Length: 236
Image (cartoon, rainbow, N blue to C red; front, side):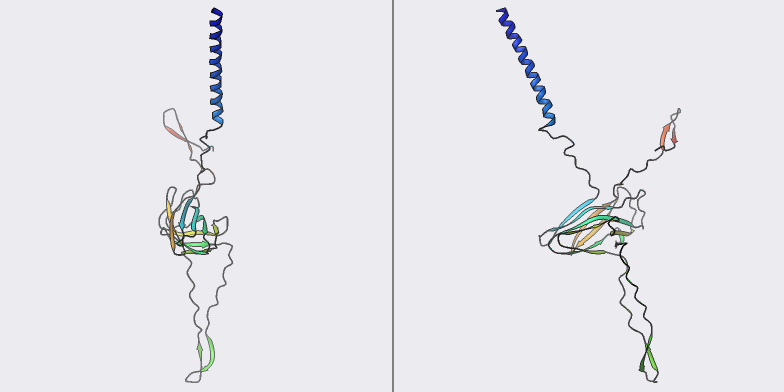
Protein backbone atom coordinates (compact mmCIF):
# COMPACT_ATOMS: atom_id res chain seq x y z
CA UNK A 1 0.00 0.00 0.00
CA UNK A 2 2.87 2.36 0.76
CA UNK A 3 4.47 1.77 -2.64
CA UNK A 4 1.14 2.25 -4.40
CA UNK A 5 0.56 5.57 -2.67
CA UNK A 6 4.08 6.70 -3.55
CA UNK A 7 3.60 5.82 -7.22
CA UNK A 8 0.27 7.61 -7.30
CA UNK A 9 1.75 10.76 -5.77
CA UNK A 10 4.71 10.69 -8.19
CA UNK A 11 2.41 10.30 -11.17
CA UNK A 12 0.34 13.28 -10.00
CA UNK A 13 3.47 15.44 -9.69
CA UNK A 14 4.62 14.47 -13.18
CA UNK A 15 1.22 15.27 -14.67
CA UNK A 16 1.17 18.65 -12.98
CA UNK A 17 4.63 19.47 -14.35
CA UNK A 18 3.58 18.50 -17.86
CA UNK A 19 0.47 20.71 -17.60
CA UNK A 20 2.56 23.72 -16.52
CA UNK A 21 5.01 23.17 -19.38
CA UNK A 22 2.20 22.88 -21.90
CA UNK A 23 0.59 26.11 -20.64
CA UNK A 24 3.90 27.97 -20.93
CA UNK A 25 4.37 26.67 -24.47
CA UNK A 26 0.90 27.86 -25.48
CA UNK A 27 1.54 31.30 -24.01
CA UNK A 28 4.83 31.67 -25.86
CA UNK A 29 3.32 30.57 -29.17
CA UNK A 30 0.40 32.96 -28.68
CA UNK A 31 2.76 35.97 -28.70
CA UNK A 32 3.91 35.24 -32.21
CA UNK A 33 0.71 34.14 -33.90
CA UNK A 34 -2.99 34.69 -33.63
CA UNK A 35 -2.56 38.18 -32.14
CA UNK A 36 -1.90 41.59 -33.68
CA UNK A 37 1.09 43.53 -32.43
CA UNK A 38 0.71 47.18 -31.48
CA UNK A 39 2.93 48.26 -34.40
CA UNK A 40 0.94 46.32 -37.00
CA UNK A 41 -1.93 48.81 -36.80
CA UNK A 42 0.34 51.85 -36.87
CA UNK A 43 -0.34 54.02 -39.93
CA UNK A 44 2.34 56.54 -40.90
CA UNK A 45 1.20 60.14 -40.77
CA UNK A 46 0.38 61.71 -44.14
CA UNK A 47 1.98 65.07 -44.69
CA UNK A 48 -0.87 67.17 -46.00
CA UNK A 49 -4.63 67.67 -46.22
CA UNK A 50 -6.98 65.43 -48.22
CA UNK A 51 -10.46 66.46 -49.36
CA UNK A 52 -13.10 65.01 -51.71
CA UNK A 53 -16.12 66.34 -53.57
CA UNK A 54 -18.82 64.23 -55.26
CA UNK A 55 -19.68 65.30 -58.81
CA UNK A 56 -23.14 66.81 -59.31
CA UNK A 57 -24.22 63.99 -61.60
CA UNK A 58 -23.12 61.39 -59.07
CA UNK A 59 -20.79 59.83 -61.60
CA UNK A 60 -17.46 60.13 -59.87
CA UNK A 61 -15.72 62.68 -57.67
CA UNK A 62 -12.95 65.27 -57.46
CA UNK A 63 -10.11 65.00 -54.96
CA UNK A 64 -7.40 67.13 -53.40
CA UNK A 65 -4.51 65.12 -52.00
CA UNK A 66 -1.53 65.89 -49.75
CA UNK A 67 -1.94 69.69 -49.84
CA UNK A 68 0.65 71.69 -47.88
CA UNK A 69 2.42 75.02 -47.89
CA UNK A 70 6.16 74.53 -48.50
CA UNK A 71 8.02 74.43 -45.20
CA UNK A 72 9.88 77.54 -44.07
CA UNK A 73 11.55 77.61 -40.66
CA UNK A 74 10.54 81.15 -39.77
CA UNK A 75 7.15 80.88 -41.48
CA UNK A 76 5.66 83.48 -43.82
CA UNK A 77 4.96 87.08 -42.78
CA UNK A 78 1.81 88.86 -43.90
CA UNK A 79 2.11 90.16 -47.44
CA UNK A 80 4.61 87.50 -48.55
CA UNK A 81 4.15 84.73 -51.13
CA UNK A 82 3.98 81.00 -50.38
CA UNK A 83 4.14 77.93 -52.61
CA UNK A 84 1.52 75.19 -52.44
CA UNK A 85 2.20 71.50 -53.02
CA UNK A 86 -0.72 69.19 -53.87
CA UNK A 87 -2.27 66.72 -56.31
CA UNK A 88 -5.66 67.23 -57.97
CA UNK A 89 -7.68 64.24 -59.23
CA UNK A 90 -10.57 64.15 -61.66
CA UNK A 91 -12.33 60.83 -60.96
CA UNK A 92 -15.05 61.39 -63.54
CA UNK A 93 -15.55 60.59 -67.21
CA UNK A 94 -15.44 64.22 -68.35
CA UNK A 95 -12.67 66.87 -68.34
CA UNK A 96 -13.02 69.53 -65.67
CA UNK A 97 -11.67 73.06 -65.40
CA UNK A 98 -10.45 73.89 -61.91
CA UNK A 99 -10.17 77.44 -60.62
CA UNK A 100 -8.13 77.92 -57.44
CA UNK A 101 -8.45 80.96 -55.17
CA UNK A 102 -7.92 81.81 -51.51
CA UNK A 103 -9.54 84.29 -49.13
CA UNK A 104 -6.24 84.23 -47.23
CA UNK A 105 -4.23 85.74 -50.11
CA UNK A 106 -4.57 88.49 -52.66
CA UNK A 107 -4.38 86.00 -55.52
CA UNK A 108 -3.40 82.46 -56.51
CA UNK A 109 -1.12 82.04 -59.52
CA UNK A 110 -0.25 78.96 -61.54
CA UNK A 111 3.50 79.21 -62.03
CA UNK A 112 5.44 77.29 -64.67
CA UNK A 113 9.09 78.41 -64.73
CA UNK A 114 9.75 76.30 -67.83
CA UNK A 115 7.03 77.91 -69.91
CA UNK A 116 8.09 79.93 -72.93
CA UNK A 117 7.06 83.58 -72.45
CA UNK A 118 4.57 84.89 -74.96
CA UNK A 119 5.95 87.46 -77.40
CA UNK A 120 5.14 91.04 -76.49
CA UNK A 121 2.73 92.51 -79.03
CA UNK A 122 4.08 95.47 -81.01
CA UNK A 123 2.83 98.84 -79.91
CA UNK A 124 0.45 100.44 -82.43
CA UNK A 125 1.92 103.30 -84.40
CA UNK A 126 0.25 106.04 -86.35
CA UNK A 127 0.19 105.39 -90.11
CA UNK A 128 -0.78 107.70 -92.90
CA UNK A 129 -3.42 106.69 -95.38
CA UNK A 130 -3.89 108.20 -98.83
CA UNK A 131 -7.44 109.19 -97.89
CA UNK A 132 -7.82 112.90 -98.42
CA UNK A 133 -9.65 115.09 -95.93
CA UNK A 134 -11.61 118.20 -96.58
CA UNK A 135 -8.45 120.14 -97.34
CA UNK A 136 -7.07 117.44 -99.62
CA UNK A 137 -4.26 116.63 -97.18
CA UNK A 138 -3.80 112.92 -96.24
CA UNK A 139 -5.16 112.32 -92.74
CA UNK A 140 -3.12 110.01 -90.47
CA UNK A 141 -5.18 107.29 -88.77
CA UNK A 142 -4.30 105.12 -85.74
CA UNK A 143 -5.18 101.39 -85.72
CA UNK A 144 -7.46 100.16 -82.94
CA UNK A 145 -5.58 99.29 -79.72
CA UNK A 146 -5.33 95.54 -79.03
CA UNK A 147 -7.53 94.03 -76.32
CA UNK A 148 -6.15 94.44 -72.81
CA UNK A 149 -4.48 91.26 -71.56
CA UNK A 150 -5.64 89.70 -68.29
CA UNK A 151 -3.49 90.90 -65.40
CA UNK A 152 -1.18 88.46 -63.64
CA UNK A 153 -3.07 87.25 -60.60
CA UNK A 154 -5.82 84.82 -59.87
CA UNK A 155 -7.63 82.73 -59.57
CA UNK A 156 -5.35 80.12 -61.10
CA UNK A 157 -7.03 77.96 -63.73
CA UNK A 158 -6.18 74.53 -65.16
CA UNK A 159 -7.97 71.65 -66.87
CA UNK A 160 -7.74 68.01 -65.80
CA UNK A 161 -8.62 65.26 -68.31
CA UNK A 162 -11.14 62.50 -67.52
CA UNK A 163 -9.82 59.97 -64.98
CA UNK A 164 -6.67 62.08 -64.77
CA UNK A 165 -4.66 64.00 -62.22
CA UNK A 166 -2.30 66.97 -62.00
CA UNK A 167 0.64 67.07 -59.60
CA UNK A 168 1.65 70.59 -58.63
CA UNK A 169 4.86 71.27 -56.71
CA UNK A 170 8.22 72.90 -57.28
CA UNK A 171 9.90 69.58 -58.04
CA UNK A 172 7.44 68.86 -60.87
CA UNK A 173 7.95 72.32 -62.36
CA UNK A 174 4.47 73.84 -62.16
CA UNK A 175 3.05 74.91 -58.82
CA UNK A 176 0.42 77.14 -57.25
CA UNK A 177 1.65 80.32 -55.59
CA UNK A 178 -0.30 82.19 -52.92
CA UNK A 179 0.58 85.84 -53.43
CA UNK A 180 0.14 88.53 -50.79
CA UNK A 181 -0.85 86.53 -47.71
CA UNK A 182 -3.39 88.50 -45.68
CA UNK A 183 -1.86 87.37 -42.37
CA UNK A 184 1.26 85.64 -41.10
CA UNK A 185 1.51 81.88 -41.57
CA UNK A 186 3.62 79.90 -39.09
CA UNK A 187 3.71 76.36 -37.70
CA UNK A 188 0.25 75.40 -36.46
CA UNK A 189 -1.51 77.95 -38.69
CA UNK A 190 -3.31 77.28 -41.95
CA UNK A 191 -4.66 79.18 -44.93
CA UNK A 192 -7.97 78.36 -46.70
CA UNK A 193 -7.80 77.36 -50.36
CA UNK A 194 -10.92 77.21 -52.53
CA UNK A 195 -11.15 74.80 -55.48
CA UNK A 196 -13.92 75.33 -58.02
CA UNK A 197 -14.41 72.13 -60.03
CA UNK A 198 -16.61 73.21 -62.93
CA UNK A 199 -18.93 75.22 -60.66
CA UNK A 200 -18.70 73.02 -57.57
CA UNK A 201 -16.62 74.44 -54.74
CA UNK A 202 -14.46 72.67 -52.20
CA UNK A 203 -12.55 74.50 -49.44
CA UNK A 204 -9.59 72.96 -47.60
CA UNK A 205 -7.05 74.29 -45.11
CA UNK A 206 -3.36 74.22 -46.08
CA UNK A 207 -0.77 74.22 -43.30
CA UNK A 208 3.02 74.18 -43.30
CA UNK A 209 4.61 70.96 -44.53
CA UNK A 210 6.68 68.77 -42.24
CA UNK A 211 10.41 69.54 -42.71
CA UNK A 212 12.40 66.92 -44.62
CA UNK A 213 15.26 67.16 -42.12
CA UNK A 214 15.34 67.83 -38.35
CA UNK A 215 14.89 71.45 -37.38
CA UNK A 216 18.15 72.95 -35.96
CA UNK A 217 18.16 73.00 -32.19
CA UNK A 218 18.99 76.02 -30.07
CA UNK A 219 22.05 76.29 -27.81
CA UNK A 220 22.37 73.84 -24.95
CA UNK A 221 21.63 75.07 -21.42
CA UNK A 222 24.04 73.83 -18.74
CA UNK A 223 23.37 74.66 -15.05
CA UNK A 224 26.39 75.90 -13.07
CA UNK A 225 27.24 75.30 -9.44
CA UNK A 226 25.03 78.19 -8.34
CA UNK A 227 21.99 76.55 -9.98
CA UNK A 228 21.99 79.29 -12.62
CA UNK A 229 21.57 78.37 -16.26
CA UNK A 230 24.53 79.10 -18.52
CA UNK A 231 24.26 78.85 -22.29
CA UNK A 232 26.85 76.53 -23.78
CA UNK A 233 27.88 76.60 -27.44
CA UNK A 234 25.81 74.32 -29.66
CA UNK A 235 27.91 71.22 -30.33
CA UNK A 236 25.42 69.62 -32.65
